[in-house]
Amino acid sequence: QVQLVESGGGLVQAGGSLRLSCAASGRTSSLFDMGWFRQAPGKEREFVAAISRSGGSTYYADSVKGRFTISRDNAKNTVHLQMNSLKPEDTAVYYCAVKQRLGSYYSSYLYEYWGQGTQVTVSS
Image 1: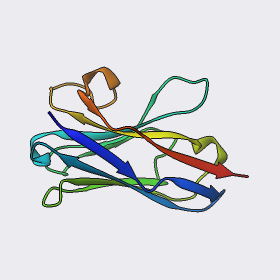
Image 2 (image 1 turned 180 degrees about the vertical axis):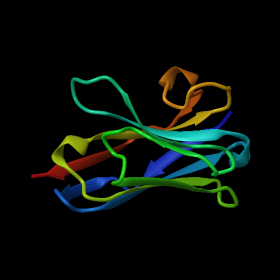
Image 3 (image 1 turned 180 degrees about the horizontal axis):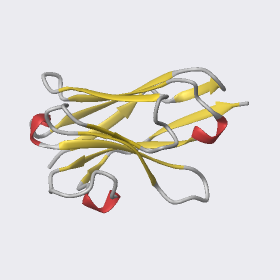
């Protein structure tokens, strides 16, 4: 079992920045890949970013590439999502997730554990 707790969400104006954090407990984080997904009202959950268990590989949705940066600190069992140049369309609940199985980083069904989510609201 892995427990995930997200933090760092909030309200920010367009063009601003936020840094999300996800703390993992229950198992050593270096054993699994981690990702961020988001879900806006009335829309399906979508992939945002992911990072391999070593931190050596990162993956981004086209919509956030160049604006968001995912990183991890395995010594602290945490993963972060630095979000810059935020847009109103980034407004959503952001979820941290853990993937232990092999396969695409972009597919939510391969992620076994999920956090409770943190709200990000970007005003225009």
